[in-house]
Amino acid sequence: MEPEIVADYACETGEGPLWHAGERRLYWADIPKGRLFCYDPATGTHAQIYEGEPVGGFTVQADGALLLFLTQGAVRTWRHGVGFEQTIVPDIEAERASRYNDAVADPRGRVFAGTMPPDRDHPSRLYRFNTKGVPTLLFDDLGLSNGMGFSPDQTRFYHTDTRKGYAIHVFDFDVATGELSNRRRFAHVADADVETEGRPDGLTVDAEGRVWSARFGGGCLVCYDPDGTEVDRVPLPGARNVTSVAFGGENLDDLYVTTAGGGDREKNGENAGALFRLRIPSVRGLPEFVSRVGLLAGKV
Image (cartoon, rainbow, N blue to C red; front, top):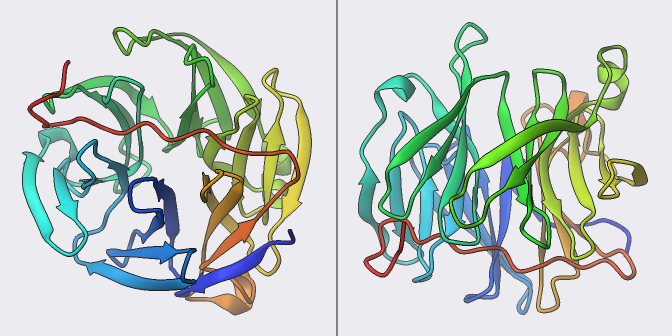
């Protein structure tokens, strides 16, 4: 399947596509404009369902709600058709001038979430939230925390730093504790190539352990084997700033891709800010983990 546009809201920064298995719908955000959207592939319909505080990342909770990572370190639950339900974290003092930037649930229902600083003089940070909603600061020296994912055997954690080294790093992951160790570079864009190649942004991992990375400024998806070797590259027509990617659909064989720059299509491409869908033969994803942050049945 060639990349097709399934929804076009000319997003300033379309981000965070996430398949909600319980609802059989895809959610995604336009972060700076504080908008959330959903798409139902069964009917081909889509809609804006939220407008308010910027949503820098979100996960699907085990009870079907969305866990929204907002500004100033706040984390709240929100349900389609209901609205906000519970405040898990009202704020984090160190993040009162920042917002979140991408989040992912782990196999035990914890969530890893990174931040976008207000300017380059402030650090980007990565936190891990346990199921009680307590954050642990993991790193405070990042350029811009971005796309994350887990290997199919749950032994590896991938993390993107879009600004510092233009790199994706891989860690050993302890599923029992959520601890990360043995950080090493998995893939990167050389400084001299950034203007033409773009920077790594959001990512997802397929059922064979390949890493699919969006290229902001590069107009494409780049696929890496588990050893970090590039094995495929998929251009997104008319969209220079490709921001994130996720698997969805009944068989998790549809790739949904968000893009940015809809406010200046002359510069960023005629389809900038649109949501794309494509399918690649023999490539499928795995179900995303659900978060259990703040749920009574959750275990730390």
